[in-house]
Image (cartoon, rainbow, N blue to C red; front, side, top):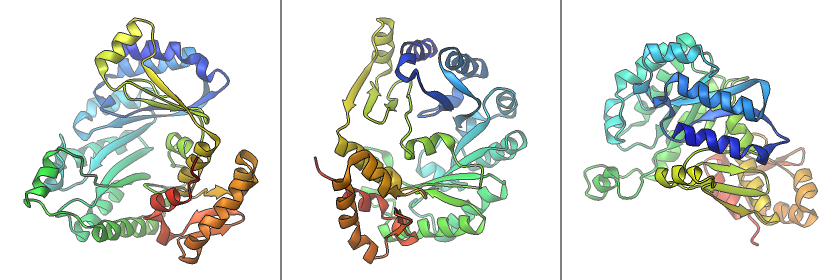
Length: 344
């Protein structure tokens, strides 16, 4: 698989020939199972085939059970300068319910070790877990903050179809989580992190000043990105592309010097809708000037007209001709944004 990733990196270097690489992100699976030499090989391949800024942000997503002290020390000596650790919860019952490979002890130990060797650490936490009370959710947040991490990504639990958790809920063995509880825990999250001087810079992301994820911010600001590997997605502002999910098909295609990829050209309206969706999720909002410059006056008129009802409901507001979500509107932002979409 490593050789296939290297080959794809080499084949696709011409796609972003005039772009300087600002971030490198190992994620979308369990990249922490790779050893440091394999990670270094991939990083070297990027440097050999692309133009990279002097001090790029290089992130590794990691599971707590993969982060032994030896592994963390090795990583700290590599070019990787940011860890994103999938803690999810510090409660054993939650981790078992979500079928996580690590336990609560490993979650805490991984952070204790990681914070000794890395300054830039992000922690993933999940809210809306069945049987997780508001007090326990506060404890999860407090525990993460006590380790001094400067960034937290937090998401509502998604019940995937045909999973054990879905079956348990359907059979009444696990309580279904109602939207009101999910919303309440989101409000607890935002309030607690605001008190801890975190900036809520994107719907699911909170960071201390200077520790926003440069990689993820690139998505939300509409910058181009190149995704390498099975299921990886790419975007250049006008075109989306995605690789096949199947590992065998992915490797076979590259052995035949074929890219295992599908592409979709975005219409002007698609690009507008993308900008509205990503912009409203962030503190940077949706600029009327950008809409006018990139899409035309008619799109600006449409956006102002459609957003009026949400302004009256105090879910959106304008600040210096930039449309943003209010605190009240943040939890509802995906639905609001889709309502502002223009149909092709």
